[in-house]
Image: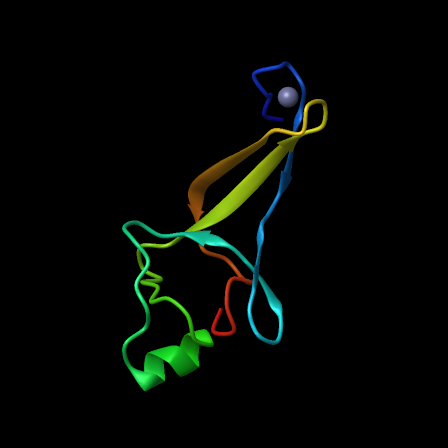
Length: 86
Ligand SMILES: [Zn+2]
């Protein structure tokens, strides 16, 4: 169990990424967001920004049960629940 700088225990969670029809787990991708350019890319991702899944990592959000601080970690490969295609 990870610890907060205050000494409290960090609780793992995630930050939902709300699409038009469902909620998805947020991922970390390097660089800056840019809009999907092609129609096919927009359809596959449900619109929004372009995402290179090969470079993406699952984003874990750990919340301190004592002070409420949230720390984000991106160390694991992308798993299910990040998009309609995964
Ligand atoms: Zn804390």
